[in-house]
Amino acid sequence: MTQHQTADITQAVLDRLSDSTDPRFREIISAVIRHAHALVREVDLKPDEWMAAIQFLTRVGQTCDDKRQEFILLSDTLGISMLVVQLEQARRSAKALQDRTATLPPTEATVQGPFYWEGAPVLPLGTDIGVGMPGEPAHYSGRVTDTHGRPIAGCCVDVWSGDGEGVYDMQMGGDAGMRLRARFHTDEQGRYHFWSIKPTYYPVPDDGPVGEMLRGMGRHPNRPGHIHMMVYRDGYVPLTTHLFADDSPYLDSDAVFGVRDSLVVHFERHAAGSAPDGRVMDRPFHSTSYDFALAPAA
Image (tube, rainbow, N blue to C red; front, side, top):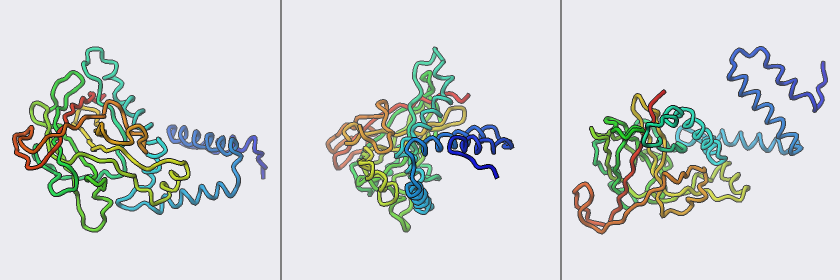
């Protein structure tokens, strides 16, 4: 049996891929092998340290269930999710970015996060999804257009957020069901509007192995206040993004590196009385407006 030395074992592993029939898989796994071996050499990794890493990843997997995805959280907090999002948006929006006749840049994307729940109810524009929820009421409005400013009618605006205490429905367990989630469709002028709550900052789940990692790194687990929005319609590059409250703490140190300046919005505070949609509010409320621009699909 050939005995491989530390100088050539990496190449020996790579040589075993010669029969791989998937070029993209071979490209990716080859890079994983090269970088992983380089890391081991760079830090002179000890056996007990490698075993600790294996046990950590094992616990990450064991922490996952149908409502908690610890591996997504790990990817998010290491900045990998955001890097993948940036590369994907640049790739899929390249045509729009090269279009010199476009008047608007595509709205910037950010991480989806671990709390997306497919199948939120489709509701009429103007619906209040924050009724009975902890938090201060907020009215959201805006338009969805293409990069030339033309309205996109019938575009889905899929929204979700934590409540005013920073808790998502998926974290409540039991039969809590969907809360603060809905899908709206834009009107003929590309307009959307609905009621929810003003988002507040909250910590990502830090009671598992990712939380241990963050503490070991000397990092906090907090995300600035934001509402998630997934905006899509056939013929356009789908967008997954957030709107961040401009007065929230942690905008400069988001635990998942998701903040983009273009996504930070102001929430205007109003006294009780007439709201932008004509309803009369019996307590103070907030309002904000944001326009989305979608790139055409290649």
